Amino acid sequence: MAEQLIISISGMRGIIGENLTAAIAAEYGCAFGTFLRKRFGDSKRLSVCIGRDSRPSGSMLTSAVTAGLCATGVDVVDLGIAMTPTVGVMLRELGCAGGVVITASHNPIPYNGIKLLLDNGIAPPKSDAELIRQTYFDRAFSPVGSVDCGKVRWEDRSNDVHIEKTLRIAATEAISEKRYKVVLDSVNGAGGPAGKQLLAALGCEVIAVNDEPTGLFAHTPEPTEANLQGLCEVVKNEKADMGLAQDPDADRLAIVDENGRYIGEEFTLALAAKYVFSKQTGGKAAANLSTSRMIDDIAALAGASVIRTAVGEANVAGAMVENDCVIGGEGNGGIIDLRVGPVRDSLVGMALVLSLMAETGKTVGQLADEVGGYVMLKDKFRADSEQAGRILEAARQAFSEAQLDTTDGCRFDFPDGWIHLRTSNTEPVMRSIIEAKGPEAAETYASRVTEVRESIVG
Ligand code: MG
Image (tube, rainbow, N blue to C red; front, side, top):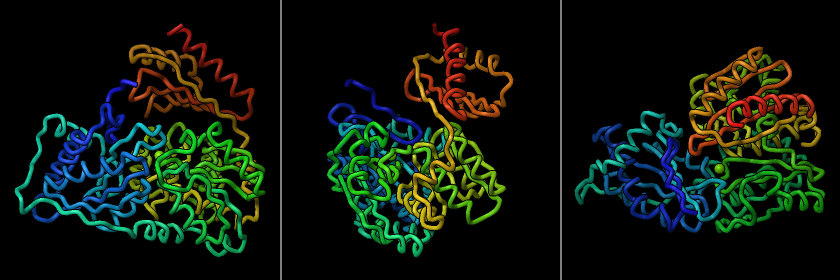
């Protein structure tokens, strides 16, 4: 498993016991603290709030990053085990200069990571991320003397604060009247306690599975169809109204319908948007370029438009803030509602989808069938950067009839579907995402992409 420690825009990710150590985490904390003090100046005392998912290595990394921050004169508010979106909510609630999330999201237990957020709740933009990275590599830290060292305090209201904000955007009365029976699978990540608390506050009968935040994941943690067969079974056996699955840091939400059918993470954003746009005409939504066209159809019905961004949460959140978007997110089940916070949030997903069900009186399966009809095909293949460039060039010629967006690789839009080709930031692979009305059209686009690819890499 000898892999490199990855230091990217959104932070650092590695394997505990191999390349992500306490010493590295402490120095990364020093780098972030130094960056924040430069950014805000020394005139006021700064604080950073820090939360961790439930991985067993989380305490160790939290302590190490906390030490680094305190060494540079920054106070720390420790939220303990907290969902990624909760850190985004609390840092703004507490007026912190930044936030740190200790999580490796859906990666297996041996992994962990350090994700940084600025005072607006969004990951640092590229230029700031580069500054932090360089400060870390140069060890250009600004330690303070004894009396100025940061202090740590613990905060245990964070789930309550987050849930209260979420309840304000939900049709709480309508949902409560329905007494929905909901199976929640939190994969023993950070989301179990808050997920149960929110659903109970919405009057749901909650059947919680894998709800202990032990970090010992009960199944492969990414909330995909293959990993959620157990949840589908429980929904069927319990004759529940729906199944909900969170990833370990609870920023993503996948849905299982009343028949135990995994309807897929793409539908979480589509249904959330459908509810938001049932309340207003016009306005804007934001989604990354790899996200289903369902959100465009839904927005169009409300006279609204969709801004497409490069892949990556910070890109979507940034576009939402800039354009005052009423809803946004990514096709991986990450829903953002700025009324709660600029971070992908499984609680927001639950609240909005249940609101849509309650107000329409329809089941989640019926709602999914209404907005669906698309087929999405995802693929990835090896291509180094030179090959990737040639593939994109060949694709531009092959798909010259399409509308082209080059914000992030190439996205080709056709009347009945689209193709998105982009390179990975972390490995020499190219991803192809294709969506079209019906399986035949999707297969046709897939074979055209294969033709382009084979003309370059064989
Ligand atoms: Mg996640």
